[in-house]
Image 1 (cartoon, helix red, strand yellow):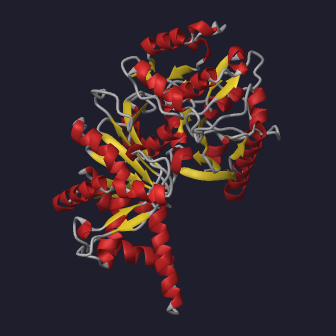
Image 2 (cartoon, rainbow, N blue to C red):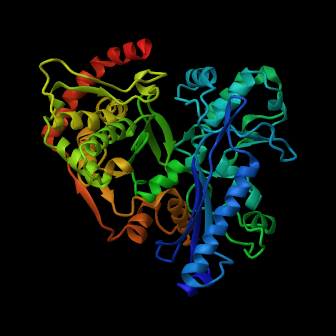
Image 3 (cartoon, helix red, strand yellow):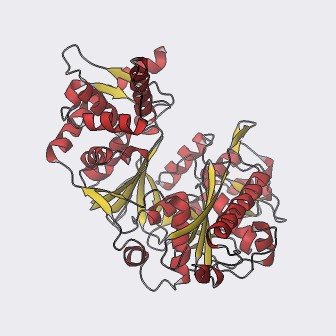
Length: 526
């Protein structure tokens, strides 16, 4: 391992998540051998969720320093180079710079929901769903607002694109990350030419000095080299000066793309679902959808295949609240509570419940839920007097409803559009209790669900894999590389859907849809 590190037979991936910056160093077999991290938090300033430039660079340097320390501790060697590296970050948002490279307004993250009018206008103009968090929605909203800085824009990018630019001098994005800035044409792997022209027409009366093509990053697919670490970039990343310049970098990617790589879900007809505090599912499509759906976001894999994404704000928060209530009861009865055992017991109890939850109904809406039309939420449990109210059904309905909004969106893909999915890869807290969340998810999507033992490695590992893919010359497709070089022989468990579970979930969803008026009344009354 020392030799591999000293000779640069490694790949480094660093990802800026919402609450943590994480670095992962991999060996020549693409397995993690060291890591570093830095915790950070966004702040609300003047109504905008943001991170400062100091937050970004101090956090990155601390994360990298912690990785270097981990390498020294484990292998007693100084890290001075790697074979390849890559950067990724939470997607979307708005970072606008003038010709001198000065940030014109504070970084606007994906979390800001301040672009409603722009999102609606662009969706209608393009006949393509443009979510509020996309960079083009932020830009158009700034134009609608009459913000003075817009005329001075020379470059518009995302957080991953900004870091990559400063380290390499290259104004590029990986296609997956670019697809969260502006729609990508899957036939070309580049921004939709028609929509670029439409946008310029929409703002022609403003007489800006720029055209939209001028200020967006270039789009690269996975496997292409996207520059090398400059001497200035090396000093930015490692102020000690020990890190050498000249390291090749892969295209910067978004957390959706790195999640796909880290779960081996980049091939068509595969998908992955991340289920924790929030939940999102992505399915790699074989063709474009027949029409625009407000509930479906379209992005791409790192190698340019079209991906349908369903993103929901609520998943396990209400489930966890109920489990904590049972914990409090047990402690009040003088019992010592092991949380893993408690979760396991309650989750497994759900498998004993009626397939349709016995007529019980729940909503897990801690916050609003776009897919079902709620700007606010109220966690809710309701039943009829003759419903089958027992612990098994109670736990089952809370597991079902954790995926209720997600299933609403996925049913559009699977039932209305006839999208085919051969396998879903599950990761996140919902899947920690073996077999339970997995079987519920299989029922929701009517597809086999696999949970890999490596599912916890995350996006920093994913971008390291993309760096390794580039360093190896991209001799095969990304899907083949992941199958052969990364995931071959890795252990995982796969559960096929049970037909009675699928039918039961569908029956529950009829009640879920019909009962949304109850949730609406709760929001209005409480």
